[in-house]
Length: 115
Image (cartoon, rainbow, N blue to C red; front, side):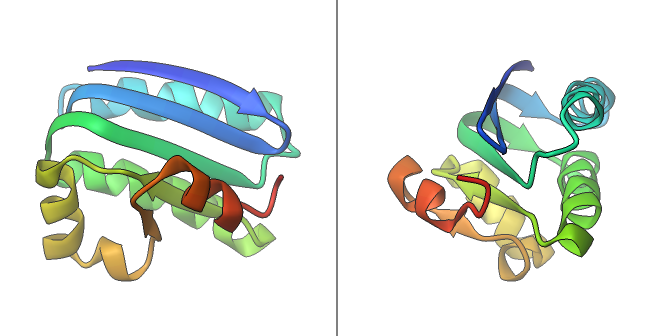
């Protein structure tokens, strides 16, 4: 898995390529938490998941954990254009009913409160 993280305003944009699973979830968590700790004004996370080839329960859990961190402060995690594999995992797990999934980046930015 590869990630690219950048802060735009009060939004953390995270690009993910490859597998988000038991082996890669800890490094994903660390990269996101490092940015959240360094930028306490961040309200939302946009997860760019177009290139995610596989996601398991560990990957879903790390996404849910970031959601639980932001939600009490009015923030959100927004999944952007997930690959078919990622979308299916989000839907089967029930996360799609909790975490918004947007088909386009423009749609996700419209939902972000930190803009």
